[in-house]
Length: 470
Ligand code: PLP
Image (cartoon, rainbow, N blue to C red; front, side, top):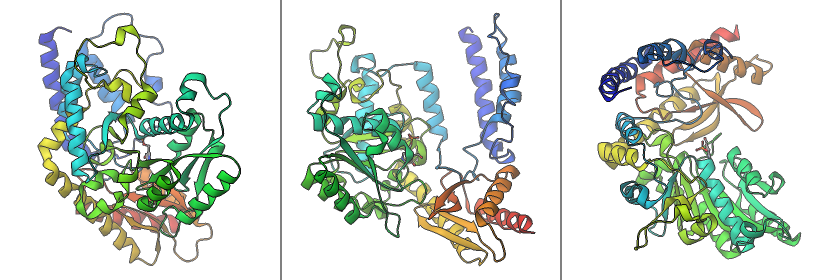
């Protein structure tokens, strides 16, 4: 494709993008295709000859689009939000055009220096102390893996990096029973083993029980295990539970245990002063992650990994073959040493666009609207005797189930309800289990969600529940 055609197609695509965003509410929120529907329309063999761009784009519209779940639809209430916003999309276009790899300072000094700056902007906006520096990683899973590797190397005095696990003691990792499954996955990858992930019971508010944590650590020490790391969750995926970070931090300091904070979703709300209490104790943490790609209007992927001791992080990851040696005489930051991947996208650019286009005040306004809308949805269901709130509102997340009298198996009934809601295309929810009950999570976080979307969805839930109950 020559540059002239590129210009023309780019204009066409931008028009399509704007039309898509304007018309998104006419589309079913969750894709309605069946497994295999898309694959069977894609040729089994690669194209031998060049094809016209218009033909490819037509196929995108007719084959790909039906298989898209519209995460930017205002009635997307499933999982956690996967925010996008116009300034972030525009920055993504520039990033793709530059096609830069921000692995070393010298491979694009602007990318590295802007990353340092926007991370510090976010640190300040979230009310975190200036002992944290950080980098942008792809996902919370990846940042937590880095934290687990740091903790492991701290315990082994960097011997596992050099010699492997030979002669190492068993290291234990403590998380709340509400913690995200990515932690167990990371623990497997980092060599702790899933059996050494100790799940601590939660209190009535779905927060880690600090007394239970103390007892489990004491029991493990008595058995000769090494408590290597505690991961505190701020905003658990199922229930929004917020672990008592200050108490956990004090315990970790006393015992010299590495403390990582998983604030993947709720971390964005730290830009709201009234929610900064959640991070009280973060000054005692060694590492912390949160995802602007969830709830801070920045397109996937964009995960912020703060660390207190960047030298320990770099010592965990640094490896320097000749071809990666930089040519600068002065010390510079090479972000390739701050995590698993060598190659890195210029993700700071989209944060820079988003933070400048909205300002912290603009972002605060949007998040506060989401929290108010979460409250509105919660209160409406709480005041209806046929519904049960199964976990209270935390930020903009709560869970509920339809529990009218006379229904024998409420789990099966609510499975039917969520299936009917999602099949309607008019809203999209996901489920979780609370105290063993099958329940429906409702999180509000899509950028354009307004009060009428909540009212319409409440009507949908009530009418669908009534229909499947007869
Ligand atoms: N931690 C929590 C609390 C989450 O809710 C999630 C995902 O929803 C993750 C970690 C994993 O996030 P990522 O997809 O960025 O790895």
